[in-house]
Length: 560
Image 1 (cartoon, rainbow, N blue to C red):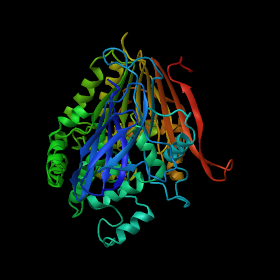
Image 2: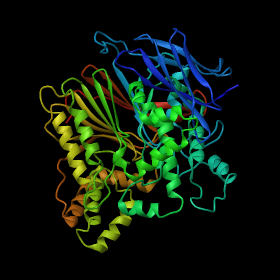
Image 3: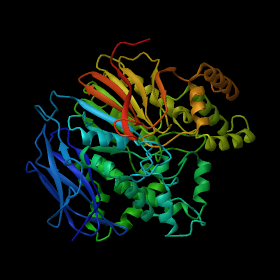
Image 4: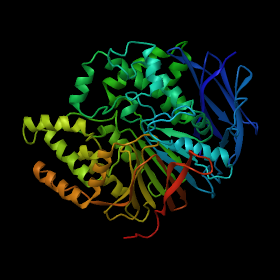
């Protein structure tokens, strides 16, 4: 009898018709996975095989718009989810109401909860180094209180797994498998080891239930592959010269495609995907997927990991800021030309037909001013503007200090700024344009000083479950200070970089800790909340609790 090894994960929910969804599962052998809903909706799919593992993405059809229905997962006629001893409520699929021509009608709007950088929580009863897990804590609150406000969508903005920073449990598992004295040591080396990261993260009982009942959209960042992934051409050349890198990058892209990317796609996109068709039709899809990953590594411009979703009158563009980079020092770009054009085309298509534009970028667009100036200065020096000695120093500093955000690609920073100003200007501009980011292990709200009709925000939230060194925390505080701005101007003079093409100010934060942001979008209004996970002494000693530290309306008049 087949068993459920991982999942279910509720991924795509159709916001055009309110009638369909997709459920991702991993099973322990080949089987047919079936989803049965309490209202009679359902669907089934045969598993496909990758490297000895069996997966299915089950299309669920016949759902009732504007409804919430419980579902179960059945393998070979036997129910395997919900689990018999589960203490959680039934997993459900919620669909939006629709009104005329398939457009979502009036209702509660869209609630988007987002964050990044989650290292797996330790097993129950054990203490970990990072404190309370914000996503675990959210799951516990929703499970305990059916009336609690539930997100319509989880946006996981990178570092869903850490291939290079492993827990004690995973290191012990690796040590039983191979000699950790040989490279890459206590880091994952192949596809099988990547699956262990997903098991550790997604089998967490709270996370497993949460992902089964709240739709999630995901994108990678560097630790999903390797710290500083694609930070520079010199970095990439050094990695490719190591004997273990090729297997690492192929396994990273293969496991990302299976565990994260497939669920981001709509059923129509899946049906049109030749790789998905090839993998499903083959007795074993490993070689087809491996060839795809090899091509994506050799020429990133041949693959698009970015994607677009429309939720009624809210548009989301999830942008790949890692694999799509151009690394040549004389032409550095966060996005290659075709990717940059894709972002522009999808932002401008139907301009005036949406009320909110969300740009999901794992890396922040607007950073603390000192760090922004340092990254522009560093990029100039790496390009050789002050000679080869400074270029060598700057390359070393770039890696040590993670100077690789939008500011480290000055032309790309300016192009994104220009696009946001263009989208946000005019009588048909959306009410808000928000760049949603993570990566930097603190949270803040920043607003650019540009003459737009829309309210424009950089909303940064991380980590979900991680920590930050005291020295780095002090560095971020300095980066936002007046002293930091003065130091940044000094770096700009040394690098002869000039002033940034726009200025901005931090209007909220910074906050440090494990946290999640939630955007509530209704009509042309937007409200932002930041919740932090804390361990409380009451009602039960040590019980994590979400504490709201910010709750503000983004579409209100400027507070000055």
